[in-house]
Image (cartoon, rainbow, N blue to C red; front, side, top):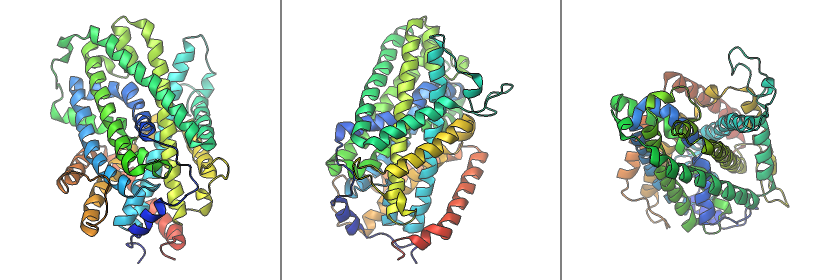
Length: 463
């Protein structure tokens, strides 16, 4: 049955060496900055405040635990990405190891994860953008500033800035991956500069007494915060989606995956330590601009505007890279026949999946415009944790099935490292709410219906 049949791995590797219509223009530096662009954004500028209220100063440990879970999974990703450098990320890897049904379900999962991530970050971008222009005395009509029902007691119809940023970045992605990478590199350089400047300025105002008690809510609070701030690391896996547009994927993909994750972990730990050292953790309750709050508390009001700018640029790159990753997964699924063929067509001049890019931009731009942020963020973490668990299992299966396969990068400590990745991911999933589990289950059931109603009948492997 095609449900459990896997794609021929040798054919996939041979296919990766043939022209796909996509332009091979990305190098290791582009990939590291792409990963940082996807990771440093909402996590460091928004979730640090919520995490501090949940874990106290132990937020630094929360980030480390989440990073360890991601790190184990990243090593597994790096082996697959360097061995099978084709578009589609974990969807493609699962197709080669666990079969078509598992591949479809994880691809369906990633469509939700990447899509809602772009929508959620667009809403956060809108808030910081409105804060920035308010500093210049400019204000949008309140009816156009938020989704319906997002502001209790206030009538709103649409989040216009969120929709606009999605459409602008969709245009960039549709125009060309080289141009998008250049824009991403510039914005990443600026936002990392802002973060480093915060570290230099904020370190002078740290009061060690604010770190006591270090773990006011115990291990439960620290691990609950880890499950929450895990969202801050989502994005490094988007690097693997660029496989068919990388000059030397066997070497460059592992560098991009591991390098971007390591750099962001260091930044997160230092920033969270400085924030909780400047401001008592209780004061972050209900605050959606914790970095700015820390600077204002320290009397560095002059720098608050730079932080707003850094947050805007940070979220812009997250949207850009996550939308890019989603279009490449759709491209791969369509090429396999599981989604309509039109979604894998490449523009003859721009060398991008133009139709799929605009379809994603319009759909999730509209979702960002009319759905409140708290609703958008419910499913993102659980979907990512499930994906990381699957890729960790798949690397063990691949070692058993194809020990002869040439691997440019080998995940160390197999099967221990993949097992630790699964254990950490499952542990964090346990700390997510029951509502999240129910909603995730409904989405997977819907995916099964689509698979048996359309994808299985049109699958090239089935034919």
